[in-house]
Length: 275
Image 1 (cartoon, rainbow, N blue to C red):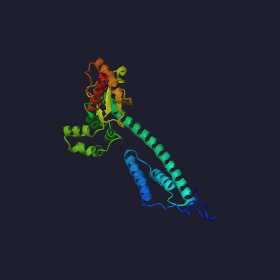
Image 2 (spheres, rainbow, N blue to C red):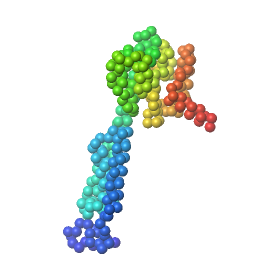
Image 3 (cartoon, one colour):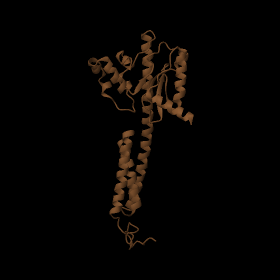
Image 4 (spheres, helix red, strand yellow):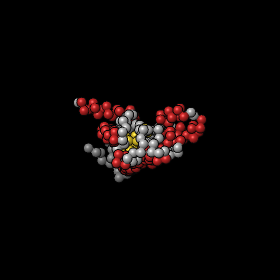
C-alpha cells in the first residue's frame, strides 16, 4: 500500500513511508555490475563486429535506465523521465547496432567473394597469356601483376604486412622462401596449378580457389574456373568436390588434392554417412 503524500510538492510516492529505505551499497553495486557487464559485452562484440560510437553510447544507456527504474536510484518524476529516456535511447542504440551489423556483414561477404573471384579471374587471364597453362602458384599471379597482393587478405582475417610491402619483399627474398611466406599468409588456397585450357562446359564445376578458413565457422568462399564465386556450407563440400573431380576426369586430370579445410569437411561427411 502506497503512503499518501504530505503535500502537493512531494515528488516521490514513498518519500514519507515509514518503511522506505534508501538504496544501500548492494543496489549501487548491482547497478555498477550491470553497467560493467554491458560494457564488457560491447567490447567483446566490437572485436567481432565494428560498432559506431554513437550506438555504443546509446546501448550503454539501456541498463542504466533499467537499473534506475528497478531500484529507484533517483526519486519521483525525474526518475521516471530519466529512466524512460535512457531505455528509449538504449533501444535506439540496439536498432542502430543491428543495422550496422547487417550492413557490415554484407560488405564483408561481398569483399570475401570478390577476393576469391579475383584469384580465379587472374588465373584465367594468366592462362590466356601463357598458352592456356594456369599459374603454378599464387606467387606467379603476384609476380605477373595479375593480382593485387591485398586481394589475398580476407576481411575476416588479420592483415599481414607481407602483402602491404610485397614489392620490397619480392626484391630481397628468394622465390621459394617468398612462396612459402605467401602461401602461409594468404587467406585463400589455390587449387588449379595443373589446369590448362578449361572447356567452358566444365569450367563451372572446376575449383580454382577456396578460402583457407570458414566464414563465421559456417561456410567457405569458393571460386571456379569460369570465375564465378559463391559461399558453400561444409555439408556441401563433398558434392562440390565430387563434381570438380568428375569435370577434371573429363579433362584427363586426376582428382584435386583437397587442402586441410576441405579434407576435414570430407572426413566429417564420411563419418556422418557411416552413422
